[in-house]
Image 1 (cartoon, one colour):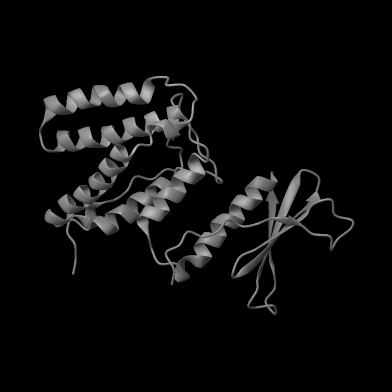
Image 2: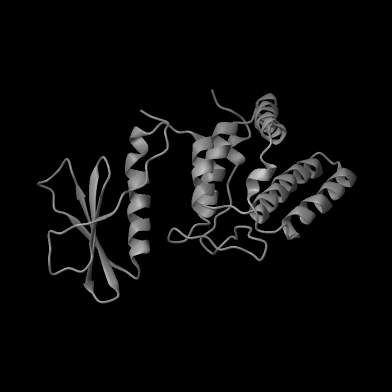
Length: 230
């Protein structure tokens, strides 16, 4: 088993069918994926299990764009590899953000920092510290709604922020442990919920660049993780 992130599928144009203008193929460890355009403006995906050449290939018609077909193949690739990949929540979360924001801007950094502070003030509300929560909420709203420009976010990437973020992850895990929560199980459920924000491999954003919740979104159910079963 491995906890390394899956490598992206590499799509190449094949020359096996000279009559086909589009004949893209990609390989995972388990499957071959082939995208063709049998009808103008409609794309078909053929999926074949490499270890079962005798098994009939599965055809999935029709996708409106090549990207939609590639997104389906990528999602199937991730599902099929789950038995062989060691769960790693941090990697899952990082890959989710890479899909949502492949090239983050300064505004994206600040919006995300505001979202981070938002979760802290919700924690203060949960412990009854309402005045402190209100002050932090104002700061979170400032980061989420202000325009900081489109420059490189690396100028904010100093070691003090990295150290603080690492310590926040560690101390949050410690609080959950002390309270008897199953933080690992709860985090996987939150990841599942976040994945439901993706529609056909795409995200929708509000005016500040924050990821929105579409109709497909389902709230996380954390009730089973209030206590860690042994």
